[in-house]
Amino acid sequence: MTRVLVLAALLAVLLPAGPARAVNPDEMLADPVLEARARDISKELRCLVCQNQSIDDSDAGLAKDLRVLVRERLKAGDSDDQVVAFVVARYGDFVLLKPPVKGSTLVLWAGPAVVAGLGILAVVVFFRRRRAAPAAAAPLTAEERARLNKLLEGDAP
Image (cartoon, one colour):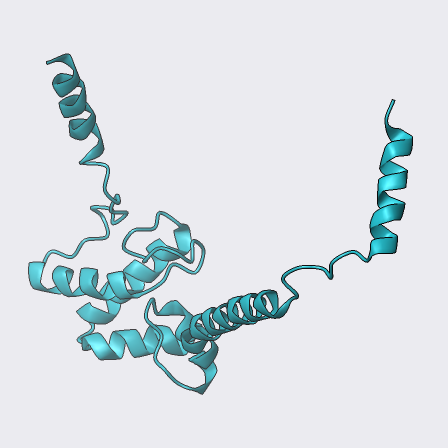
């Protein structure tokens, strides 16, 4: 029974430990529709300081500036695509958490597959060379066996 209570307490502590939202109340728009659009856009844009978080999740100052910029553009009447295009024009494709597939981002998309392919190729070559190696050395000749026995007898007490 004690284990169940400990497990329940542990789950109660860990379940709410999801990603914290960094959007401050003073940044939020009064219009819930525009705010929802701003949040959706913010989830697609990378924090240029953290690099592994969206600007919606990041507490960095630049992420806050980008969130404010997104909201300003939405209030000005820009569409979601126009807001994203504006941010990409300023910061490049790197600001997108899911960059488009094109020549300049090809390494991002093909890199993992190329590295995995090279790894598989290295494993295959390793095992083929291992299999091709001789299984056992040639048996000793009578002369070699006699010399070995003589050496072994010399070491015995």
